[in-house]
Image (tube, rainbow, N blue to C red; front, side, top):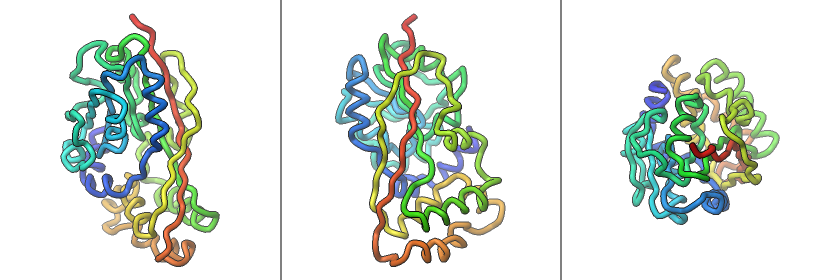
Length: 251
């Protein structure tokens, strides 16, 4: 986890600028399925893409991350109580939360120690929900180029936890009863340059650059541009979300 937090911390500004936004309907569902709307925690919050929308539904929103750089760089954490912490050792009181979420990060620390913290921190009936998203969908031509980049160029550079995203979190099993989550997806309209910035935030892109001494996305850009077409025209992008959610039994 230390190496991962260093990777994301090194490009905290880019992460905040280029990562996609989660749908508002998801946060309304989270609030409606929490026992109360007093206190929510976003674990491994990064630059706060999932923290800020919680403010519309919860009286107190907390956000933590192992990367101080991520917490410092975020422009989205105004009004959110942020703190640096290891996800498996959270400095909060027992049964102090109505909701705990993990957005695009559970695969780095899905362990018995973390789930013990979930059970310790949630109030009776409290909701835990984590989600991930994998490769975007644009069109067949662009998708094909990005798929080759993901699986072939970067294939040996993804940290081990990334396999859980490829599996849509189907390999992560909660130690308490799971509950179903409606089908949610992210959608965006991006420029070609925004897409390149997003690809540079991938952990494997950063590891490839460290080992080989130059940016793999720069190498990819000409082929990707040919598939994209007119780079002055933004394109519609879609990411399905995959969930694990549940409510631990009260002890």
